[in-house]
Amino acid sequence: MLLALTEDQTLLSRTAQGFVAEHAPLSQLRKQRDTGDERGYSRTTYTKMAELGWTAIPFSEEDGGLGMGLAELILVTEAMGRTLAPEPLIPSVVLAGRALALAGTSAQKNEWLAPLIAGDKVLALAHSAPRGRYDLTRVPFVAERAGSGYKLTGQASAVWGGQLADGYVVAARTAGQHGERDGISLFVLPASSKGLKAQRQTRVDSLNAAELALEGVELSESSLLGRAGEGYALLSRVVDEGTVALCGEMLGGMTEAFERTRVYLRERRQFGVAIGSFQALKHRAARLYVELELSRSAVMAAARALDGESPDAALLVSVAKARLSDAYCLVANEAVQLHGGIGMTDEHDIGFFMKRARASELTFGDSGFHRDRFATLSNF
Image 1 (tube, rainbow, N blue to C red):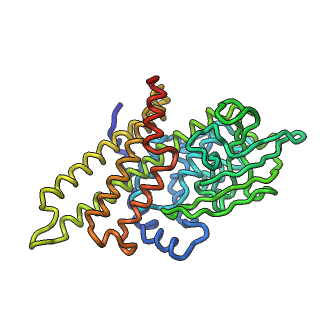
Image 2 (tube, rainbow, N blue to C red; image 1 turned 90 degrees about the horizontal axis):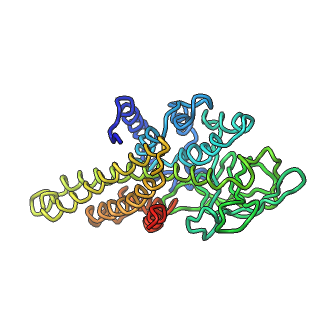
Image 3 (cartoon, one colour; image 1 turned 45 degrees about the vertical axis):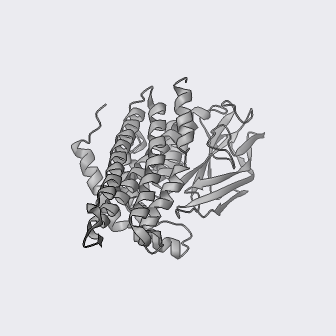
């Protein structure tokens, strides 16, 4: 597996980093947090991202996309991670969008996927039940037959990008019980559906999230994604893809936190010399660099494995998320500590990376969960 960027990928990476630095700086996230912005991100910036083609990257040309893959998308999410850009590219495009691309009918794609790629609509995936602990069989909704359609009831927590979304892809149980893979179905529905309520949740890292409640929401058969009761494989696939895209964002955050800390070590002087000249601090910085490079290789390998539909793809996804969960928290914690007292204040930006690291660690499974998953998949 070649873990190097092509010329086109290098150009994409540079373009993405330049764009987010100009249009989605960390100062924008701070402003949205401090003003209590209802959406939590800039719809204008997200539209510009769509105009650059970012929302079209993981979709086939037949679906109106660019026919690329996660190997390219993680370059964009890495750039977004460097400024902690809050725009919902991962929840809308990778999670909900890819579910539509993989299982949607022509009518569903015309109604939802085409405007999603154009940046006109934002969708979110609601698949996590309260206290579900990353178990994809513990879906938040129950779907019962109602005439020729379904009636959905339940509550989903931590719906990433769910506040003010235009629609949702939801996971519901049409048969069976928690712990069983059979009997899970996915549905797509508009935010205006009668009986649907979305309430914003406040995350420590200030990202857009919501609690989604469905109170007897009635849907027609045409809202079903794929076959009834066979949605687990689809859900597992898009969550794996979302996990790798998130790992790309985490890699960007790690890189930025490390580089900001390296600059500080060179500029901060004590006893007449730069503190970066102290051997103990050199050793700590060297360890962070090693963790950063190992993490980069893990993310690239997982993305290429999913793109190539490798039989080891799920294993490599867990390797990447386990490593990034630990490494991002390590880099962020060290960055705050190496900045000294100023790093503990809200006025300094370095603390934002620690908050994002903690939230990202717990999204789609922490390091303990993915090590256990790796062992299970490896038949240990």
